[in-house]
Length: 280
Image 1 (tube, rainbow, N blue to C red):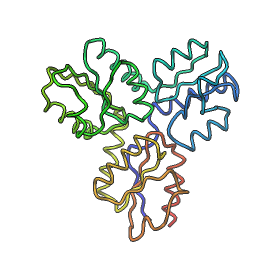
Image 2 (tube, rainbow, N blue to C red):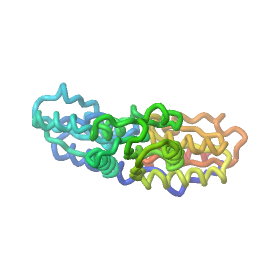
Image 3 (cartoon, one colour):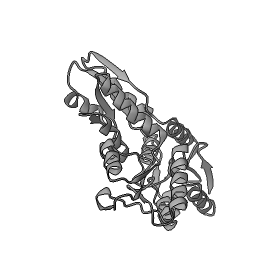
Image 4 (spheres, rainbow, N blue to C red):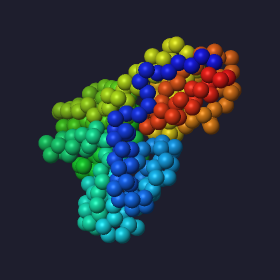
């Protein structure tokens, strides 16, 4: 089978930084002596490798002894979590993505300027839960149908978005917001350009292949968005974690397959998958 790869795919700089920080922390403090408050990134194979090196990624502040070494994962944490960690004299190692930090700072700033903050994103995603903690009463919406009921009238709105969302999705919701009678709307672009470039490359590749494979963690928001965008192009699309999830029926009748990978997907996962496809 012929395989074509998206020209932008795989690890982004935020993920690379988070993994490097986590590995360095384990080396510095020793295996088993540092605890992450959740998976460092949303990729099972990377999480497993970090655990094999000695990083506990199932941390809970309420169960840790005072003074423990605590790693903040790439998705960030709420101010309350950080304050609790500091109060318990934990040594904090921060692996928060710089773009997530930017979103946190923007939300804090918008509230200080008197704006009613709105975040476009998945309210259950750890990044969103962390970002909205930087201002009180942040409204989270993720569908244009939610705008009318969720947002107050005649308010000054400050709008941000989950870093992994697509520009098209955000624009659709913003367009709905501007139809409402708000006195002022201030929009900050908090989208990750690395993620956007991967989305554009994946959509472009759909024009050249008969079936698309999007590799990455099933809980990875940016990988889910890649799969959604490819599927929206009308091409059969499969979101898989790796070669172990592949079924030959997925490529039945196809001669050319496209492959891309989310921003938290390691290159070794992609290469193993490509070799498997090419061997068919």
